[in-house]
Image (cartoon, each protein chain N blue to C red):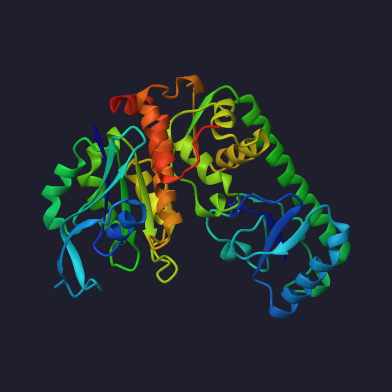
Length: 181
Length: 220
C-alpha cells in the first residue's frame, strides 16, 4: 500500500531540500535551468520532486514536492488527490509572501479541509516581515487552522518538526486517520 | 502628570516572579532615573521588574497619555501616580513607586488567578484554538508548540490535553489560561474524550511514520 504527503510552496522555498532531509532515496527531481530573474537559484523544479520512506510493514510513504510556479497548478491537484496531508513552505525573502500563501490555500483547500496542514516560513532572520503572527492572522482570516512555524529546511530537525506537527494533527483527527486505514 | 497603566500587551508568558515594564513620554533624565530606581527596588517588591519595550505588563506614561498610549493597550488604567506639573522628577519617589509596582503586580496576579479559576471551571468542557497563537506566547516554553497543535486539531478538555500531551497539568493550565486571556479559545459543550483518538490502523500508520522518521510518539 502507498501513502503520500505533499510539500508545496513558492519556488526557492526549499521543497527539494526538505524532501532530501527525510527521504531514504536521493530525491528524484525534474529540475531545469531557471530563467526567472526574480528567483535566486540556478535550477528550479518544473515537474515535481519525489522521495520515499519505507515503513516497518513494507508500505511506502511517498513524498511529493510540487512545482512552485502557479502555471503548474494543474499538477498540484493531481498530487493532492489521496494525500495524507500538506506542508506549505514559504520564502519570506520573496515579495507578496502573504498573497502567495493565499494561492496555496486556495489551490489545496480540499486537501487542507480533509486532512491537515502545516506552514513553514523560511528566511525570517534576514527578512523578518511579514512576521509569523501576520501569517497566523492570514490563516485565521481564511478560516484555516494550522500551525505556522519558522523553518530552515537545511536543518533536518526543522524539517522533522514540520512532519511532527502535521502528524500530531492527523493523529487527532480520528475520522481522517481511519480514512487512510 | 504621570500615568501608570497595566497593559494588555503582555503576550509573553510571565515567568514566576518576573514582571516587565516600559516607559514612554518621559525625558531621558527622568526615564534613566526611573530605571535605576526600579532596579534598586528588586529586594522591596514581590516580583522582579525588568524593562521590556516589546512585551510589558506595565506601561508608565509621561504627559498627555491620551496621545502616547498605543491603541489597544490602555484597557486597565490605574492613574496611580498623579499630581505635580509636567515631567517633575520629584514625582519619582521611591515609596510611591514601590506602591505602584506592588499594586499593579497584585492586580495582575489577581487577573491571572481569576483566569486560572475560570479554566479550572471549564476543565471538563472541550476547548479549541480559534487561531494559531502569537509567537511571543509560544516561545515561552518548548511544550507550548505541541499543546497549541493539539488544541488546534480538535476540541479537547483540559484532562484530554494533559493525558494526550504528557505535559504536566500545571503547564497545561498555565498555557490554557494564557490562551483564554487572549481570547483564542472557543469552548464547546461537546466534550471529545481522549479515548476517541484513533486507535485503528490509521493511528498505526502515523505511528509507523513517526518511528521511521525517528520522531517521538505524540501520545504519552
